[in-house]
Amino acid sequence: MGNVAVTFKIMPESPEVDLEKMKKEIGKKIEVKDSKIEPLAFGLSALRILIVVPDKELGDIENKIRSVEGVSEVEVESSTLI
Image 1 (cartoon, one colour):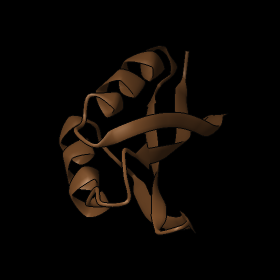
Image 2 (cartoon, one colour):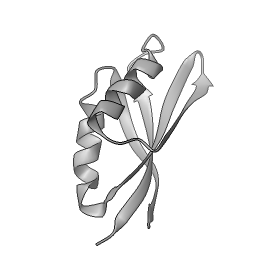
Image 3 (cartoon, one colour):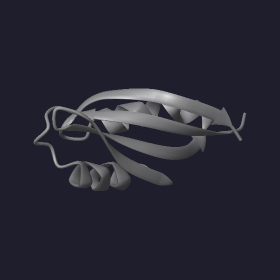
Image 4 (tube, one colour):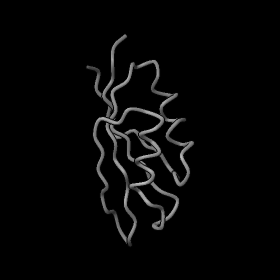
C-alpha cells in the first residue's frame, strides 16, 4: 500500500457560505497540501483541495470533509498513487 495524492472538489450549500472559513475548518480535520477557490457560475464558487494520505484512509477523509458545516457535495476529481 502507498500514499495517494487526491484532489477534491467541494461544493458549498449556497453562495453565502464563506469558503475561506470552510477551508480553515477542513484544515483542522485533515492536512491540506494545497487549496484554491474557483468561481463557477451565478456567484457560486467551489473549493478545490489537494491532500496526500495512505490509500486505505481515503473513505474516512471524505467523511471528515462532509462533516464540515456548509459542505454540500464532495467529489474526487483526481487521484494518483505516489
